[in-house]
Length: 288
Image (cartoon, rainbow, N blue to C red):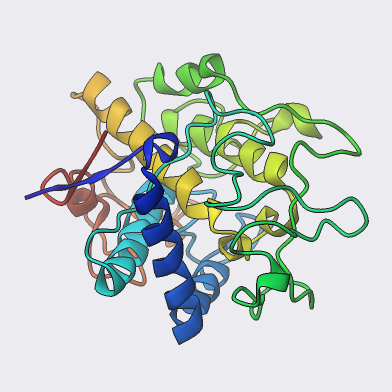
């Protein structure tokens, strides 16, 4: 029977405690840092050569769906009652709302160095030392709202703009695409600066600190954010049942994207599943 992923704001005190404790146990065992390494390994920008799977490509959504499931399975090996909650950033939009509470993810970083000093993932608590990253910092950092150049979280209107597009994705299947649900949700826009960051990308920048770049998994909010994005993919699928993951077939040899994106029936590294197989996981979990 399918288990339930809940809105983080509706978790009971016990559910919050169990989720946090399971994360801390994965960290203690060294398993959590493997997830950081995996995300770094598959964070290939479209300005580089080779296959793109996790970002700037059609497989952004199925790749993170499978990544979330991998983390959730690890958590449930620690505590079978635990599932990954989601953060609805269209509703919980302040620096003190869920998930930034002392009993869940802790709060903002301090002004001097953005170091998180509250909650179970604060460095001083002794359980969450950053060991894998793009800098040498050992402590979790956040800059909620981006103090130096304030930024607002995406709104329901911003999310609806993506959900309303019936096309899943379009050529050239990268960060430059201006139509299609995938990139409108992933959030690579035209121009420069904050106006070019939409939905997924804007949330990463609003959180700031460790959430910037390929090692963003170091902040546990990564999972709550991506669970909410996964929910949006489900909603898009229900609203546009006649539309599916694209490309359906691999780009041809003459195409610049040949060998650079995963088609619907191709295996999605590092797993054996295809995007087609990951389009419906309703027998595994559902959202409440």
